[in-house]
Length: 336
Image 1 (tube, one colour):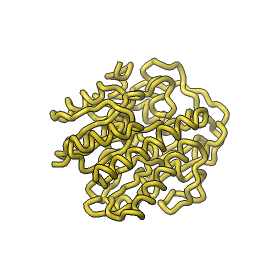
Image 2 (cartoon, rainbow, N blue to C red):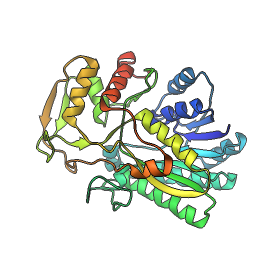
Image 3 (cartoon, rainbow, N blue to C red):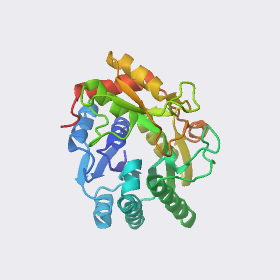
């Protein structure tokens, strides 16, 4: 057994990664400031696994606090989820995103360096690719993010690659994932966005549960089979298991970047229909004009993750919607 530090471990993806780690026999210490998450998620994680974890409240920009946790608990690796993640908010508040995402990651890396912890699995994003030059996105696609959120992720990726070049004894996995949806099959943990959801499936779920009146579909004139935007949706537990596979792949020093997606795109209307089947009711929606910057479609090439980590996504869109609905219907107001 080893002790893994999970930054942002109470968040949506982080909490599911904690389940995967604990189920695999790892020990976990979570470092989270709970600015966009709830400590209740960590209680539920322990309930699911029948195993305890350690939770430390703190800010990723507090370098000394991170170093203390790394040394106190003899951590051997870090899974780094902490940071802000809204594309729209990053456009409105870019300095806050550079502060928390980039500076926070820099301080985490310095704390790791001083503590002698040289293994990291980093939560990156497909937003680093920007507008598709070709599809599916392969890992060698040009990196040209079109919003501050994506640029913060690319800067962190560059920091990690530069650190590896300077010290090849590090092990670094950079995971570029696509559109996480769904929830743990228990219905105990799931996505609990603060305010208006930025992503499609949680918004659909809130319409289905009655928290919101209607869904707005932004554009129905894209060059796609039904005219609505196509995205690569991945079940959050497949994503969590991808992080576990990445950690296992870092059994020797290396630095690699991989996509985590299904390799298949689903349109907005396909997601709506799948969710209607899951919840047993109709999702009312209105067609609106396209939003500036939205693209027709994007989805992942997944061969590299399979080759380097032995990982492939296993769950269908129908399973994603069914699990998300179970979470939402059991927790109509999230963790409140």
